[in-house]
Length: 260
Ligand code: CTP
Ligand code: MG
Image 1 (cartoon, rainbow, N blue to C red):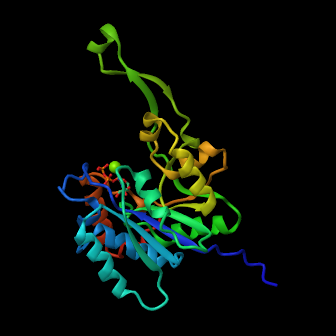
Image 2: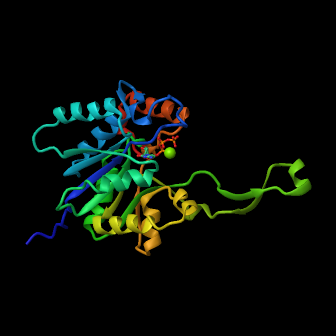
Image 3: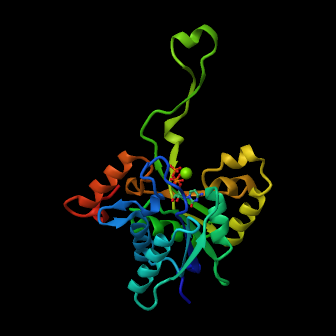
């Protein structure tokens, strides 16, 4: 009998329904060009190249025909045996988009990875680390990298102090235990479904503070494991991030050779 761990049947949810306000291109971020191709296409190429997905479920801005066409064209590029590509309408919040995609995951799926299209240059090895951890028994796993800046908490300055500076430092977080969290985040499917069902009962203020899926699983009390991510998995958010991503693509050895 083989001692290889069971590889879960895995769907990758790619959330691409955001409006890209901070990038400021006046179009959804997924459609913004990075090098010669839209951000979404880079993200999909990365997911498919990793080989972990039996299905890729993509949440797009509702009614965005050009992005839908892009997925249809990409489907034609895939050789036989590639993953099933499913498109769904995203929602008003990232969590809504994840829920919409979760509802379209095929029967028989055991694990789900949730990935930001905005992390378009995520290396294949990050997908593998996440899936390996799920195969080893994790119910939830996130890629994370050490924080390079010193991180402090602050509060608005009150009274006279406001003339000196707008905020006052209230503490310094211990940097060695801080991690910046990335995607793809991997989950045992029933665990993520349960976490998102519970999220429907959160107060509006709590729901607005949810920035990733692992937070919802933490609220269930399920342990969330962390594997090492990559600095290449930057989330393209601002124009500066786009410049960095362009630089990675144009590097002399090509983006997939940059370690870190
Ligand atoms: N996302 C989504 N549905 C939403 C909001 C966000 O699918 N309603 C996706 C984005 O497309 C992105 C990822 O979640 O791939 C992370 O979100 P973010 O980086 O904030 O992207 P945007 O919401 O598009 O950007 P901004 O907040 O600047 O408008
Ligand atoms: Mg956003």
